[in-house]
Image 1: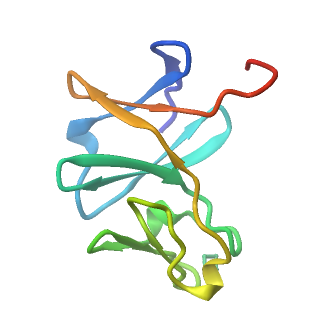
Image 2 (image 1 turned 90 degrees about the vertical axis):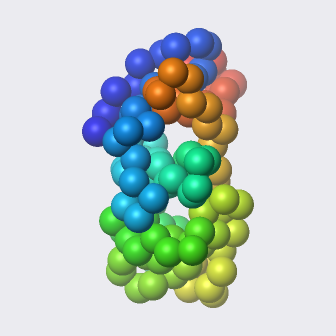
Amino acid sequence: MTTGADIDSHWHEVATLAQLDPDFPVGVEVQGQKIGLFLLGETVHAVEDVCPHAYALLSQGFQEDGVIECPLHAARFDIASGKCLTEIGQRDLQCFPVRVQQGRVQLQLPITKAGA
Ligand code: FES
């Protein structure tokens, strides 16, 4: 799903809270960046979606106990922190600020020098 609508300067509305499921992540794309949305308890987390090991979407992986497992070679990452838990994952994942306003999930991308 791609919406990418600007709300404030760099907040992007990407989903509604009702679309998120604690067992099934949702993949979105904002300004060309693939980002996975994960619901842990009442909290939404936005984490880069492409596995650092090779090309696989972590949002298509297996989510359990706050951990996402890559569907291709089983790298595991802590969703809340992005921390890589297995050597094959190679590095930690980038996490993005998230807020929920009136049931709408918004995330913030880093501001680029070009101001894009
Ligand atoms: S692509 Fe994710 S572990 Fe290989």
